[in-house]
Image 1 (cartoon, rainbow, N blue to C red):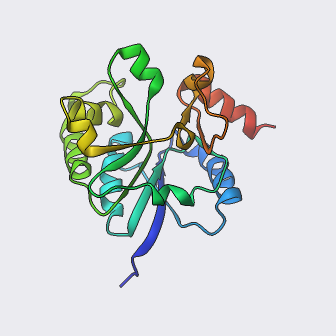
Image 2: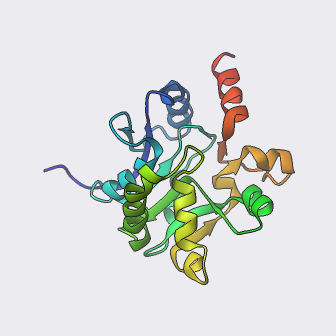
Length: 202
């Protein structure tokens, strides 16, 4: 029987995003050389809709878990994120650019940390599995979570908001809202992938 870990970082990729994995791993390993990291293979499922499910599966692997998208540039030791978890909540950074542009409060699912098995996580995974066939290409796991927690106190009940340093978005740079001490730089969108390619080719 495999021993359950205390802390675990996880990510996942498919054939379309696997090109980023060596870049991601190099940055992660440079700043977190002793941390446990597990990579899930998304080739055999419904792409990024598998994200909530593998997070739910990782509950069996470790007491505390942190998901990182592969387009996240790790710039620092991330171990302290495991000290910023609340029971039965997902710890996430507010997606300020989307909050501004969509006039609703959003949280970004590129970095998600939790301990134990928050009830919202299994609900999120179940909804993602059910809805995957009904959604277009512009709909993703973050949209599903937003629909689950956007009403009333649900967001406060289920999500602990982390400092932006844990997930600084590309649009934060454009909006001039990025913090000075960026631990994770999240290169979202097509232009973000162009920046990742630039770094790989340096």
